[in-house]
Amino acid sequence: MNLYSSKEMTLLLERHDFFFKKNLGQNFLMNEATALRIATAARETVTEDGPVLALEIGPGAGSLTLQLSKLFDRVHALEIDPHLLGVLEESLKDCENVTVENCDALQFDYQSLLTRYPNHHITVCSNLPYYITSEVIMLLLESGIPLTGITVLIQKEACTRFTAAPATPDYGAISAATAYRATAKKLFQVGPGNFIPRPKVDSAVLRLIPRKEKAVQVENEALFFKIIRAAFSARRKTLLNALTGGGIGEKERLEALLTECEIDPARRGETLSLDEFARIANILNKTEES
Image (tube, rainbow, N blue to C red; front, top):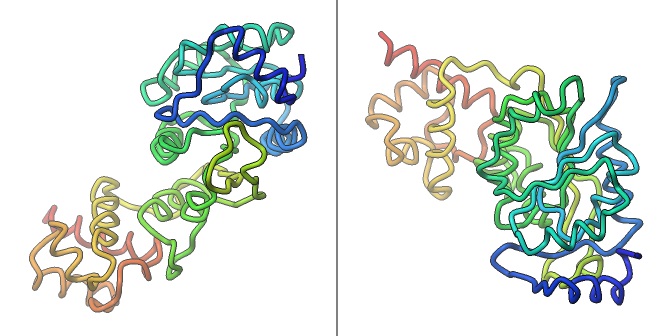
């Protein structure tokens, strides 16, 4: 079976009475060279010896899974759509190192992989459904699993947001939250013609390398992220007004605190670096504790 042939893919899906579901963001990768390139990029995140597990979220009909099975010792794929289980059983019948689990990636116990695949390095490689991109990536970064990397095919605009630097138009809360836990890089762009059904937007491959130590030291992470969310909740407002409106504190107190941090209260939130957000959070945390 050629998973990269539109004719054979159509016949495969028809045999299992499968229909694409827009609400699940199902766009199957159909270009073999692109699938191999993504799988290879994921393999490059592993720099130490030993067996390696590739975790895939949303395998679809298995076109990327097939390439992963050739490069990794084990592949564990999470598929939410039960109608694809029969499709995957047929398309991956010769891939003995692949396990497909029918579950919701947003509800999956990622820590369980450590006991199910002991002594394996773990990396993530997926053609992520657009509608869960941010949630899944943040869930993975916060999972506590020592991932070697996260290599995902996502919407190009989302990739731009994940990799955006401070004081750029696309810099937002997700950019800051990602940079705190990982380094982010856009690897290459993938056009709509690589998929069925054909999406209306371009895609891109994002590589995240989780940091061994957070980018900045904060004493209260919950407060740190609350400040970041508030700063970006009203982009046209000054930092002072955004933080006040976001429930961080009273205006006069915040103005004095920002001055103490050597940050102009009239700046916009999107101009702040992680270090500046951390400075605000740590000083505010100390004042709340005293």
